[in-house]
Image 1 (cartoon, rainbow, N blue to C red):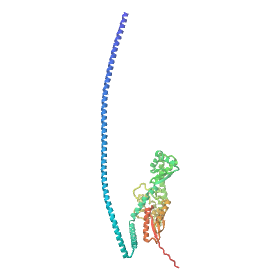
Image 2: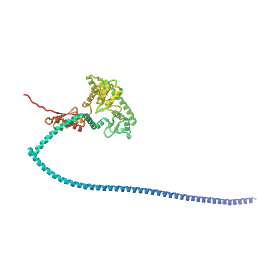
Image 3: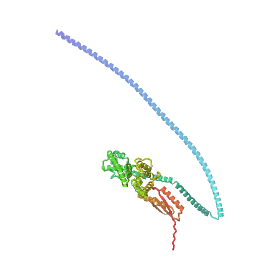
Image 4: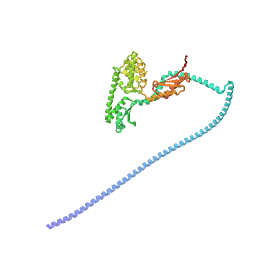
Length: 519
């Protein structure tokens, strides 16, 4: 029984092995078939995709070809158009040149014809000239025989008579011209003033708009400029002044029209260089402190000035403007010093004439107040000063004196001509207005040499600080009429050849002395 069971088991195992092997073979065949099918499908899909990509690439290639072809055709068309335009231009130029050549040939022919005609006319003219000379000689001989004079003698008499007649007529015309000039003197004076301003405006602008800040060495220039120019830009922005750092040794130029701003910039630079800490934040701090200090100093200067002059009850804003005069100049003359002089002169004059000296002194101090306003309206400084005085409740006579000291308005008070005269006195004082000594002496020498260059001039004297030129002439060589002409000629040459402030009076002196002794 056990044996049978064992055989059955073995047989079952053998059968199971065969069956499992068969099933395994069938499974392997199915997997192989499935793999083959998948491979075939993949190959088929790949072939389809490759075909699709091929067709797509062919289409892209065709499109690219068509695009390149179109671009090529466009470029060819453009080049053809350019060539055709150039050909047309060349044809036009060729036609124009041909036309010009034809015109030149025509003009050449005309010129040749005119030359031939001119030669003929010259020959005819020479023949007629010879005939005229012969006739002239015959007439001269006839006139000499009739008049009993030679041709040279008659010519000399005629020339002398014509010269005297022309001289007398010239003198009469000169007098007429001078009389007419007196009638139009105002207009001509304005022209002269404008010409003088044009010639001297550049130098005056340079003198009055530039301050020099001296430094110990040029190494400080680099610190003032700063990295990438930050320090100097901060300085210019804070002060409103252009700072010029150039090759000038041991100096920095401060340029600006406002003298107060230039002074703030100068003091700020001095403090920064002395302190050694130069950076944008420090610059702003120092400039702010300096501006406050200058404003305080301006007020203090104004108060000290009115106290020194004994003027009371002046408006604080006018006091501040008086202080601003300290930083303003006119023709190199300090405006505050000038106003103090005018105030003292006016007080003295008013006292001598029995007028109100205090009012005259007040008007003299304020007469140029229109030169230092915070803004710059388009008005003359006299009118602006008058408006400011009226604004701050000054006396009407003072307002009129301020507005009329340059004849801008009509004078209505006795103080007004005093202020005008004192203003002229202060400006005309020799040395009051800045002028380099060398140029001053040179100008006087040029004045005298210019007058000495005329014949008959014996001596010349430049007097009154170059405002008057006196010319002494020899009475035997220069007549009274010629002296008048000489004065006009010298003044015209001075006006056209020289540069000078104000006006120059030319006086020609002709003197005849007869001396005898009684014994």
